[in-house]
Amino acid sequence: MRHRLPRVAHARPAALAALAAVALGGCGEITNTITAPAGTANRITVVLAGPRSALYAGLYEAERRGLFAQSDLSVRVITPAAGADPLTMVHDRQALIGFSSEPNVLLHRNLDEPLVSVAAVLHAPLPTVRITLPRRGPSGGAPLPTTGRTTTTRTATTIGTTTGRTRTARHGTTATTPATTTTTLADPAATRWPAELQRLLSGPGHPTYDGLVVVVRKETIVDQAPLIRRFVQTLARGYRAVRADPRRAISDLITAVPSLAPKRALEASILRAALPLVFPAGLRVWGYQRPTQWNAFGTWLTRHQLLANPNASPDASTNELLPGQGV
Image 1 (tube, rainbow, N blue to C red):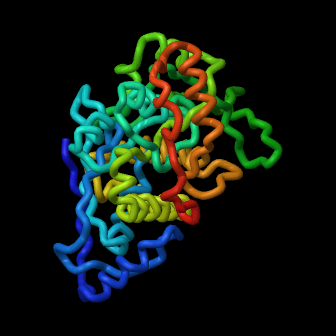
Image 2: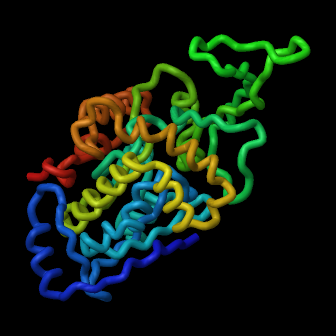
């Protein structure tokens, strides 16, 4: 279940690290490049929402490029055991930071668990991430949760033209590509949700929501805001690096998690499908959460009697730890 990101060597003097800590106290984006001496970095545990995959490429890329070390952070990544909820682990202090989804945050807050989303990674429900692969697809490794909705298609091969017309091959037959399968991802937490919520979200007509968010306890924001700010802003740098060089990001992901090597094609497909949702058009800053969206989704849950706690929806998300968004 546990997986430790590879450590990056530390080599700079402690005095420089101390100066970096002062510089990081503000609310702007982190720009320091100081590496903390071995043993002095702030150690934090991060729990993923489910199996390791390209959805978390920015997390692994930040580590592989030494960005967490530059921010004086030592990150330990764990995955929840089968049936375990990452937000329960955050609430119970088994992890300082967790990945989950907007519906899961609101359902936990409905139980008086004061959890807060501090950044959105995926600005759409996970089932909207459509992945297309050859019909046989890659095998090996732990399977990702999917919605179970797949379609198989055969498409004509266009040969040597720019008009999109298909040439007829010898013997009067039309050349075709191998069949492909299109599938979508499922929220790992969905099986623990009320049956009515699962039904409503499986069909059309529900408000959109953030499918992957970064979550901490409310008291953590109060007591350790600089630490969480450094993590969130370094994670942003990691995802921007992924967008700049997706091919390297997949290679770095597999280097960090060798068990994903047999599924390289799948992970590359997931990343291609996810990146437009990680950086949607008009995004103010990486991780920005739209308050109107959160309010609309919370109101919708309340109207369908899936939220009863009046404190569940208000202040469930904050942008104050994002670059340039602090108070």
